[in-house]
Image (tube, helix red, strand yellow):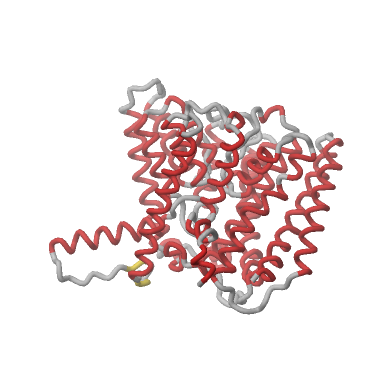
Length: 486
């Protein structure tokens, strides 16, 4: 079991270590020579450990068991941030392991929460590394979602529809490599295209590069201080909208579109259609809530409508870019935002959340049960994308819903034990569980910042971010003796 996992984790560490050498080059470009050696040491150390694991173990060309898949996901999401945190400590920007691990975990899980109190005072090389780490985390999420996660059959994920051709091999490493090549091409192309448009808008080269990586990874890390307000211009917001939506949509469909130039694959997928239906409905509700608001939120009708569009897209895609006057939003907007964060994007995307696919399954099941009240003996099949949803899959989705809600409740309880208020506790739990830490200013406007959390609070937040990417249930399985005995 451990041979296959060690081989794949070693492979990922080699890639991570090689990427740590890139900021060393950028440090000389940014005229920050004191940061070159720390990144070189960090990169070489990570590559050394990764190479040792890669050659010490080997991946077998056979189907991996669910135990191996679950354990690999746990090791990847908990182990990679440990090595990604080394540059934060060796450069002296973050001196505590809890802070460095928090920042690295937030980047790799594309959560967007940060313990850095003032981004404007942070060296550019560190900002670049943080953005690069977030971008790589988005690519890792895509590869796991497409190649690894469907094998676990967690919460109905086996109904995931991939446009990539079959024949990806049976070994875990072979499946990861097969998904990595086409997805990385589309992911890189969209990031570069977004960066060019932002550059033409006048955002600046450094900011354009970092914002583009934050957008396509659905991460939300920004290279400048935002506090509780949006610093984007109208043109920048207009550019970011389509890219946030593309990042929250099945990336295998983007690959199929660019390969065959055919929009039919989007139109025939019920999950994509459901995503846009929820998006449009949420914009209308968000706009109505702003118009009827009696709070201190002030803006004209057209501005409120545009804020509704940008905010809803940012929230449901879990990108986490704050809307204007986030701290002054009415309670109704906070409730709508919490629901949208819970729903999230589609499967096979960088977005977090419960996923549109599962939400549609629950809605279809509810509709079927309501129809049975009038026709108790009727037989109504439950289908998604022309596939029958078995009772086993249906139970798995309901169980996952219960576990997600339980995780949110327990997270809020733990935050409350640290003398945080009810709204702040719920807000911190929701934004980090669903990978949208940038929206902390909206859901927890009274929160000072993650740097103010005690040591236990920082480790708790790191755990919540990782649990969210592990689909909660995969995390619980790692600590269930019955799962390993079977």
